Amino acid sequence: MAPTAAQGIGWIHDDFEVRRPCYWTTYCWLQFCDSNHIECHRRREKEKFWPTRVIFVGNPNKLTLVEERLQGEDYLALSHCWGALTEEEKNRFCTTRKNHQDRLQGFRYDELPKTFQHAVQVTRVLQKQYLWIDALCIIQGNDGDWETQAKTMADIFACAYCTIAASSARGWGDGFLSPQTDPPDIGAPITPSTITCNCDFNKDVDEGALMERAWVLQERVLSRRIIHFTAAHTYCECGDGVLCEQLTKLSPPYGKQFFILDPIFPRRLTKSGSLRTADFVQFLLKKYSASHLTFETDRDVAIDSLVERMAQVLQTEVRYGIFDCFLSALLLWKRSQEDKTPRISYGDRTVPSWSWMAYSGGIDFLSDKTQDLLVPRRVDLGFTDDGKALDVKVRRFGENFRVEQKGKGHVAVNGTDEVGPIWFDVADRIEFKHCVVVGMDKRDRKENAQKTYYVLVVRKKEDGVAYERLGVGKVEAQYVSRDWDAGTLW
Ligand SMILES: [Zn+2]
Ligand SMILES: [Zn+2]
Image (cartoon, rainbow, N blue to C red):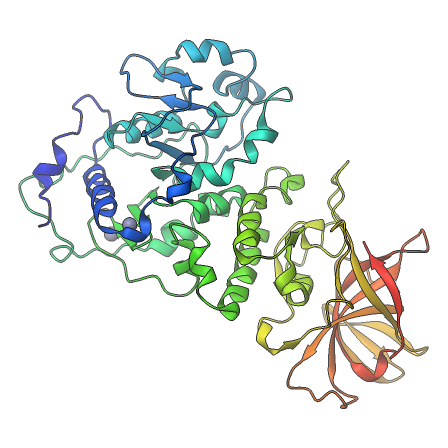
């Protein structure tokens, strides 16, 4: 039997500054999901996971940072934008070595910025006592423990009772619960069929400000369940689908959405067949690459937990955002934005030229239909043993080969013949003589001289030994040498 609003509303505290019907919806939805959606249940082996630190919100007089391992308890996790913070704000709000010991004794709710206060309210309203917020539960600063904690991020979101997505807050000062004057209709039983609603989940959530942030993608995908607090509406998302605050169940998730809603991501991928998996991997990398990072040097780490988990389940290796099981298709990335910024300077770390992580900005793939791509054997193209470079067969273009500008792009030319389009990774046109064939269209006959090769265009690095990638292209096979040299692509 559907619960009535009156049954649900009883636990809303009178002294909460914000009251919205969404509280009732989310509470009932979580209860319903717990008792009815078998797929949404927590993985048994993960039940033992508990974050290093959580915030205890069960005492109305103070909050406490807790470092004990608790069993049989639930915690919620907050997904949010950091926004533009001053150094002073960071020091005041974040947990640092300086205030860490004090916070273990307790700290005040009104010391927190509004977005965190709202997360505390939601946790209390959902009758839970523990909350995880990165800024408070990871010791921030150069002497903090971010690096060790970042490794547990996947588990933190995957094992949380629920994730609170502060979708409408662009920063910590904004909060995400707006006071609502219309009280819910407490007496009436509300069932999904009695109310219709014109909400737009894609616009509010998928195209919302929070989802533009690169870090948030893995938080979203890995979360078991999420409550999205958007400016217009509140949505509850679990393995079963999406419910809006007016209890309208949105149409069932088809396509990519189906995998994102997976409460035990990426289990659904493993059952979907390699075509849909490859398609989803490309979709995910495109989405991630186009999202924003405050520090561009986070490009290789902000998706790390997510791809590692996928590689584990897909029983493959992932290096610099390229999965071994879809090696050719993923190596054929090209930069999609017109403004081609220079390569990211990672400092001590190196990211090879063949990885899309070497540059900022969105990417596309030359071949969206991985099933149509005939790829080289493993011995001809693969990760080096240390996984940092690629073992490749380097081929040459002929004497009369050159590159010309065509419209906004470039085209390879041999004598007077057009050989095929080239996409450079950087803004400038660069002279090159070599390429690495990473695939050809399955429908092309092998003996056909005009068949198309999908290639990485490369040149010898200054050390005269290794090669580096300059871009990608589709060229006619007859202009590429049949003989080759073994090489290493960095
Ligand atoms: Zn569910
Ligand atoms: Zn709605």
